Image (cartoon, rainbow, N blue to C red; front, side, top):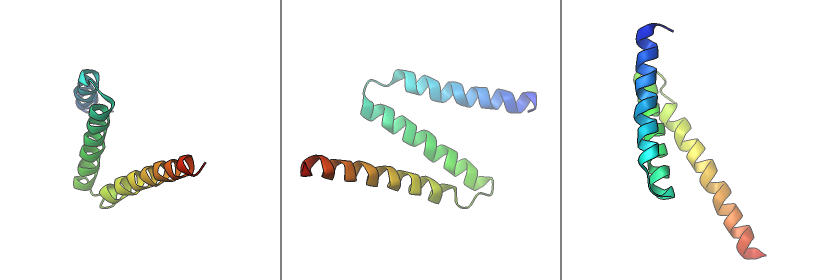
Length: 77
């Protein structure tokens, strides 16, 4: 990794870590993490990964399906 790449990566990490440290609720934390994932997917798309946003959507859909199924099981018992 070049010094310039390392500096950019450190700046990006600092930016997101500062945002995460400033949240005051779980909902705000989820929003920051979603924003980070969306930004990473957009960057990947600009870099030529046409499936990046689709892959992110698939991960989110899988997570949501798991939570929904758990909620249904909780209410069924």
